[in-house]
Image 1 (cartoon, helix red, strand yellow):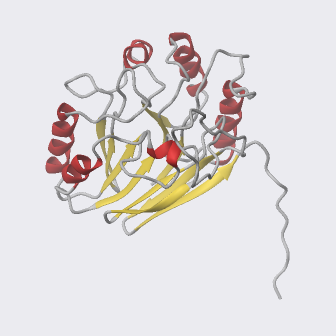
Image 2 (cartoon, rainbow, N blue to C red; image 1 turned 180 degrees about the vertical axis):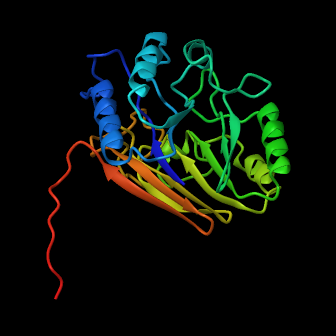
Length: 266
């Protein structure tokens, strides 16, 4: 199975800029690159912060832009999104019985679980008891299948103080819910605007750049100084290859592609 991972698009109105950059144009270039080089992918997953301020007109623009991709798409919510406005525009997207934008998908390589960590009036991730109950039911239903998780907020610290202050709340409770399944293969998340990989409680994970602005690697910055650090590192998307015994994540910059050259091996 081949997946595309895109995150933190932070769309604003067409033609407007955010942090000196044009999020809509950058996402258009990202989708163009994906369609050109990875049109054979089974699915493209966008892990939240689709919009920068949850505007209805921005979700309409995103819906139009998604129509140009040759594969199916799955859209998650981040802290910058507005659940009701998103659902008004993407009314056919799946939700759980409580109205949260989370669902499961059974594939040839296992179960994909898409989680909703959005909550009003906070940039932190929230996973309430209703959502925990849904996740426990999904893990129990698919107890004999490999599981791949997708969410916006990381459920752990990553070592960057600005982002650690905004991670998922109550990480221990989330870990306890996941402990009910013994074959969680990988966790994909966004929010941090950086390429990160590692292992948490035995679960491998990966994150990547946003398509617009990024977060610099400042490990010693004081998160309480009232200033949030951003930068303009080159954006990228992820190309994920999943087999029965391996998960591989490639990062692909898309604003420019250096020429490829070949040499003969003696």
